[in-house]
Length: 407
Image (cartoon, rainbow, N blue to C red; front, side, top):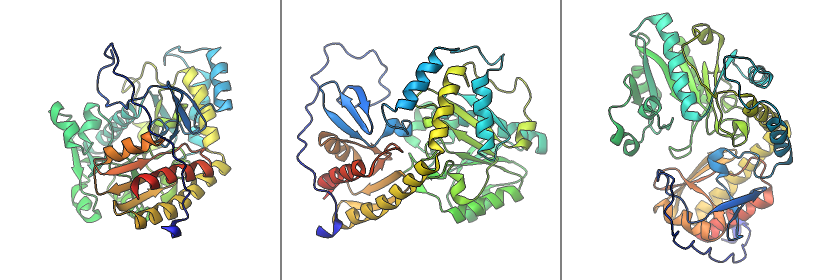
């Protein structure tokens, strides 16, 4: 254990459980919430109603890329709130136009569609892919293919493309024309039929599916295969995009360009916003009335998102994410060597999965009691998603807590 060179953590004590609430929550119970109420945050820490501070390795499930209390974000929020909040997409607004232009200038895309969430972005991208495919191949070319281990959302088409039987079963029948294929290039080649397949949707890093990082070379082969067969390659970077891997977009790590890209989570700094980025060919097939969003790309959220993407795109920030990723790779692998409970480590940048031999939930509870908030990615995988702005001392502190729980 001495070779791990991990920080020794002081005893943080045990977080007291909140007393049972006298009045049941009026919020629908679609989430199993932790027994704490969050009231504030600063840097990489969240503060509970009892005053206890927790180091946050969840980032609002990859939303709070800039941590908590970022002065620039607070300033732009205040400025944006003094102007237009909403005017609908029947009119143009400068914040939306400027944000779309920024995204086009910094990506493969020629056009951008704004919506309100990652699931909406994926649903919109599915529609755009089918609209294009119908134009080039007729009605039979409509199939959407997703991969084993995928998670694309909980709406009907995105749920059909999500490989979670427990999530899917209560809501069948799901949207038709969606297939889940194995993560094997040879078997995918048999599944991707040029005459019937409209699009293949891939997460460059499968977040909910266990933090599985696809090899850049594999993604390049996939890009070549889909291009040869006139099948749209759609990348879902809702969780792994916008700096999380150490590149502005995760596809850059593989040196490829998709045809469609779904973004959301950190895009507007915690405000609800998603986006679909499209290349020129697919964009040219879309006509007025093919899709819409009442709130998508409103002036308020667009002004905030412009600040967020510019911050995330700063070379120094992206470099620090890559360096933190290298440090985490070495440190977590040493932790795995020391712990009989750890079966494997996967990740890149600031998205990491730790496979463990027991269920993840008790380890998440134990980490929280010691002052660290982490996530699961399946029943037996711990998931780490610190803010992109996290400091090395806070990373060391968090891994020290994990060390105390797992070793």
